[in-house]
Amino acid sequence: MALATKWKGSPMRSVHWLVTGGLGNLLQSMMITTSPWMVTQRLHITRFQGLGWHTIWVKNGDTGYDDIRAVIEEAKSVEDKPTLIKVTTTIGFGSPNKANTYSVHGSAWGAKEVEATRQNLAWPFEPFHIPEDVKSHWSRHVEKGAAVEAKWKAKFAEYENKYPVEAAEFKTLIPGKLPEGWEKALPVRIWGCFLLVMNIPVKFSRL
Image (cartoon, rainbow, N blue to C red; front, side):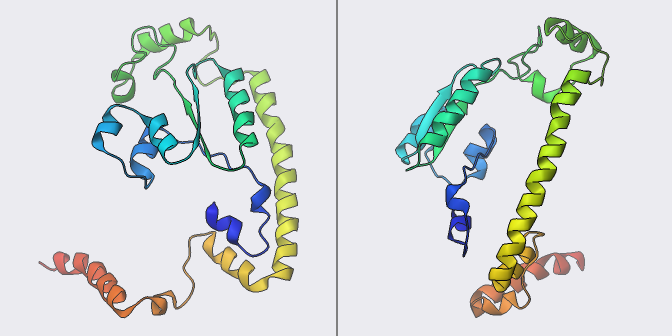
């Protein structure tokens, strides 16, 4: 996201980025170091406050939909720093016997618990059935998405005419390809280490 704002001709400075992630993403995937004590104490808000982030906590993520909508708008209004929105939810919400237990994540519920959960959530529909009102609600995004895509393609065509070199590089990066001759830009020592690592599986396969 930060790199996108530096791209030549980029309009990304006026865009709001919303990224969703679970606890594992915050503790493991993000390159933010902290002490084991802070991780085990679940001081996630304190952790990001210490890094200068604006933080908000929605304590009822199970049914607090209006609260979630409100804090997203609050986050948009903060322009001088990133915002962390912590949403606390109950794993297995709605299950009479398994909600907020590890077995929700690590084992099958079984037909009886599934049926009990359906009754507890007042969901009378057959399995895998999508009610018409739900289908129509989500189907409206098809037309909206097509319009957004067409607008993006037109904008990128203008960008490609104005910045052909950068656009070509962008089109290479999107599918995850590396530009031709990329290895020549690496220092000799790093390239040698790369070749060594790449050859390790080959050497072991010959043992």
